[in-house]
Image 1 (tube, rainbow, N blue to C red):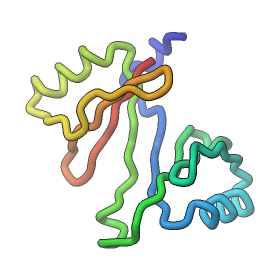
Image 2: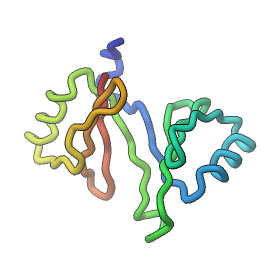
Image 3: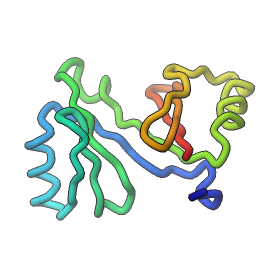
Length: 118
């Protein structure tokens, strides 16, 4: 299922949480979001206007050290990675596969952004 119309658009956002259970309770109660668990360290959310998730991380360094990961969709992951590199961007997490998909992460001015594809 190609999402060509979503090419290079923001598609997912990933936040950090030191307590996944508490995070789920808070966002469910306050905002009505629903969740899908992917093990003890990751949960995705729906109902927020954009898909996203929470990854469990240790509390260290404050919010500036745990910036959200903004993820863009690419209809052609390899071509997007080449374009990032040609414009002087580096890749901090090389292309990797996850069930049915793949992606990579590149640095921006203060944080990182990700790109994924089916």
